[in-house]
Image 1 (cartoon, one colour):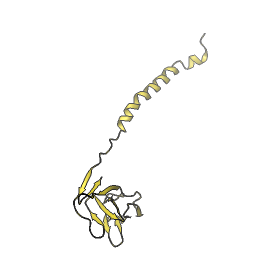
Image 2 (cartoon, rainbow, N blue to C red):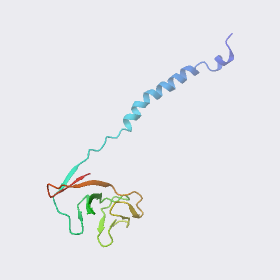
Image 3 (cartoon, helix red, strand yellow):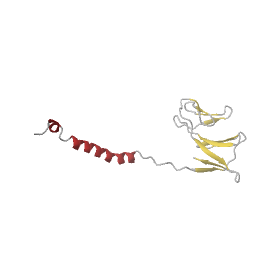
Image 4 (tube, one colour):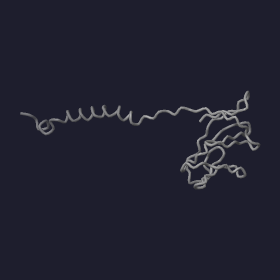
Length: 135
């Protein structure tokens, strides 16, 4: 005579084996789907001098040089992607679409943007009269 527990659940072991096997088969597929290729950095050499106020506007970024430090911040607003304008008198970057404001270091001063601007490393080359920006 077969015990009652084996009679009611004869395929529980098989089902458990299939569920675990299915998870092992899905793992590589999920890893493949969610894989992100790392972005290759782009080195840009800027051959224009900074103006007397210590900044230079480019299409994708703005370069600042103050107190012996040089850096660049993105000109793309983190709210909707509009191109930012630099307000020299106020010393901030402003979005023309929704008036988000950012400091020259890229931090948010006024919303609706919530994320800071991307900050790029920049170096003045002492041997050559250009600035190298890595985006």
